[in-house]
Image (cartoon, rainbow, N blue to C red; front, side, top):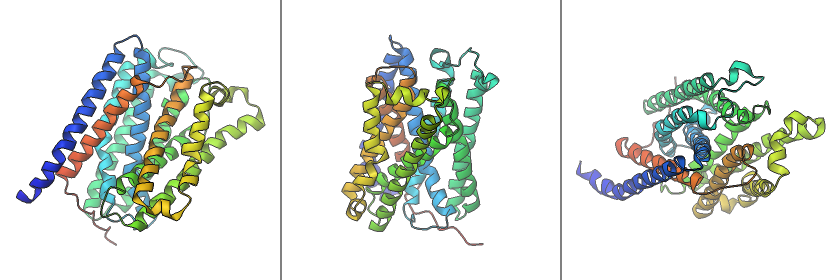
Amino acid sequence: MSTSEPGDRRRTPRTLFWLLLALGGLGLWLIFLNGAEGVRAWRSLLINFLFFSSLAGGLVVWPALVGTCYAHWHARLEHVAAAGIACSIPSVLALIALWIGSPRWAPWYRAHFHQGIWLDNSFLFARDLAALLIFWGLAAYYLRERRRGKGRLCGTILVLVYCLVFSLLGFDLVMALDPHWFSNLAGGYFFISGLYIGITFWALLATRRAEARVEQLHDMGRLIVGFSLLTTYLMYAHLLPFWYENLPHEVRFPLARMHHEPWRMVSYFLLCLVYFGPLVLLLTEWSKRNRWSLGAISLAVLAGMWIERWWLVAPTFDHQARLGLSELSMAAAFIGMLGLGMEQFHRYLPDQYLPEEKKP
């Protein structure tokens, strides 16, 4: 229709930008992959898979989580979060690529550890891929139900499946990177921090939407603070038993990150920015209600959480904190694919508010 042409013309430059960013980042990453540091390039793919899958998964789950609590403050912004489903295909393809390249980077590949078959390479990636496909398939079904004005039950199931699937990814693709270290909280920390990333990205997107009310921005700012504290608590809960129980086999994780330079400085940076940062930066009511301040703080926290995903993976393999084009090129590729997918989502699904759920 002719009424959609001006919007299409405005989207064309953005679409081209996202496409070039995705292709450029992927092309640069392939150069590193075929170079002398190919193993590091595979790990950079893992880092970005963990971050962007958490970002997109958390973004899609948040409206379901709000609806499960019988809240309605997110009306008119639910469609913004629904666009996170656009990252489902890149997420699945990245996991398949990690499976294919696992002989070059996975520490459990053709190795025998006390976990036995649980760390069998094929079994590990098969269950992770199956779980991820179930999650994204259920997310797509939930969005279809929401467009029909239903979906509360499906949304509740989606939240539960998200917790299970992303806990599994945390155990398999973060904790298992060091097969001699284990923690019962690794999965819980991973999915809660994913919700932290998701609400922060939702808030960033909301600051750019004219229909977002000040009260909604205020609520999102408070949720960012709340989930930053919850994420901080779960990380602290990792560290506290190591200290007071003196468990040598469990101190491997904090030892590499908190007692060795330069990783200790990275840990302090994360403590200031992503763990306690929102508590200070979003302390005032004005900072949560102002679009510019909330947007800037959300962007800073997202950058910090990307570094946090790097911090979860890299110290296990490298005593030096090397952050460069190998990691950033794949981040650019994912950003491009996410931006391109969300543009297409809003183009082919009208940018309208999802209907309120019908009461039985």
